[in-house]
Image (cartoon, rainbow, N blue to C red; front, top):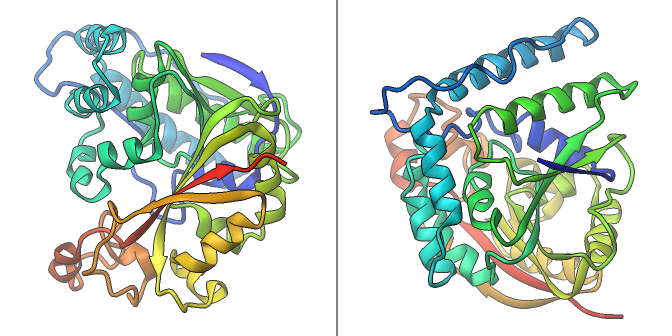
Length: 342
């Protein structure tokens, strides 16, 4: 993994390290072939330091270590070789590459079940993603898209994710550093070409790297948290600065009714699309295109537990489970913004 020392915002730490995006924490990516029998290599992380962390963070890190060990055990030599072949193959176009990646056994168990709702081929090609781009995924959560982006960009492009300062005086940052090590280290060679962008503080304006250096920043289902935590004025200027002129800010967001009050809808996970377009545009971006690839007309957007009542979270458990499974995942905006040169 390559590392560069830049800052990353508190919202990204919460979304990436806790893997929540305000959802229950699913397992990190764990690509492996369930039928493979040859044992994986010895664990990369045989121990994890917790005695300098508050109990809540220490307990969370122990849980993350347990998950990482399970993931790592599934990454057999065959899986590693399969990933090497996947990354080294030259595909005719982005769609062909994505199709191969989505069919690969490296993906975490259950992740492929989400394809019907998240339409990754249609979504990423709509945004104009290519294997040669320099891309930052902001708030990668449990890594649903990360395990797709990493192989796509490994050979000719760059995928950047947040990293954290192991020597920080802030216990949350030290936790983030160790949890990130587990996240990227457990699934074999999946993330060996990923660039970790190290942060040294939780709060303040994030810095995605040198000015005009990125071709795309991806923000999946995170804008409600940006609004809730009042991160607009910290996040958006940094996004603008790091993108090349004409580069893409790609947004997928749970979609509220057009006339919804964002202050009321954001805590439920939803954001009104017209308001979101206007807000992002006010920071020097232009809406280049919108898509209904991730639309779901069955979503009534008035669920008792917000968007997390729906799959995959299903926070209400067995209560009305069949009803919410029948609805599927949320109705979502899919918005392609471009940086307008000043």
